[in-house]
Length: 459
Image 1 (cartoon, rainbow, N blue to C red):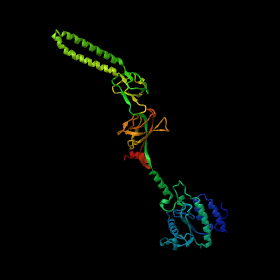
Image 2: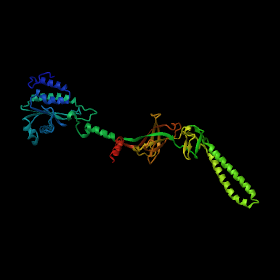
Image 3: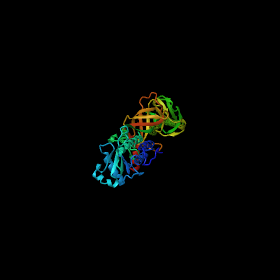
Image 4: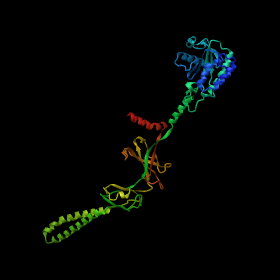
């Protein structure tokens, strides 16, 4: 509420000045301040029209109008008038008229304004980088005296102080011109404006070089395992070792069911002995019987055939006991799943790996197959210890994607760990992180979205 009578006929202009300053300090926002300036300044000086104009944004407020129409001819003419007046080197309040304007603008003066007008510039404040040059233009039928200029100068100083107190630019604000573009824009060259600096900062941030990295499921696998395969067709009868047991070279690992092979070997040896007995009988008879002598050649061939069969079955019987080719840890599934199970020649049964020869195996999806050089850094974050990574160097990556058990296609990658005298055990799983070349941060952020957009648009 005003502390004095707010009518234009207030007896004491000093009290009106004090009241206006109080209302300016108590204003809720920039819109209220602008409305107060163009409409209630008449408490100090009578006038017919007024306009508040800023270099950034143009006409801000008109007297007697809630919302000025920027495209209206009156508002556009006022913008041209104020812009020409603001270019003057005179920075103090002064009376103006058509003579102070260009002929094109002055030609319309009589259509919009009375003969007398007063221009009060609003200067830029060095302490407030968000301030903006502008001015207040008053037009009336009476002459503006020197006393009016003094009162208006004091009032504009109080109003400008209240205005600048509300237009301090926010450190995180992109809109630097205040409400409706009034007085918050940084002045000077484009690189001196806050919006330009923020945009340049974002651009520099997006150009900041970072490592191009991708994630893939991975696990620890033996580096150079000895794969133990079934040497023949048959049924596994017994395991002589347990999973994860340490074995020596030449130790029996497992054996096939020997009953079928033993019976076949016994039959083959008995047949060989029978053939040899027949040969000896015919050899004795051949001394006196020429016919028996002719049968010796066929019997010798039969003996050789039976001997070869017996030797083959003997070697098979010896191979039924599979021996370990090297020292290491035995890696295979539950033995009960194998006993009594028929296997074919070449089928993998187990592996023997050295516990300290471990490497990383990972599967890169097709969308994450970034360029990776030999020796690229690979970090494996194990599920058992997610805060510590196992580091390695890329050894190879497959050229073709292969199907995985889940139906997806991926590239197999292997990374060597180097010396791991007391490293993690084989079989631990986790997430592998591949470190590629350096790339801008913007590319790192937009790589996957851009790839998805290209696939969606088929370009």
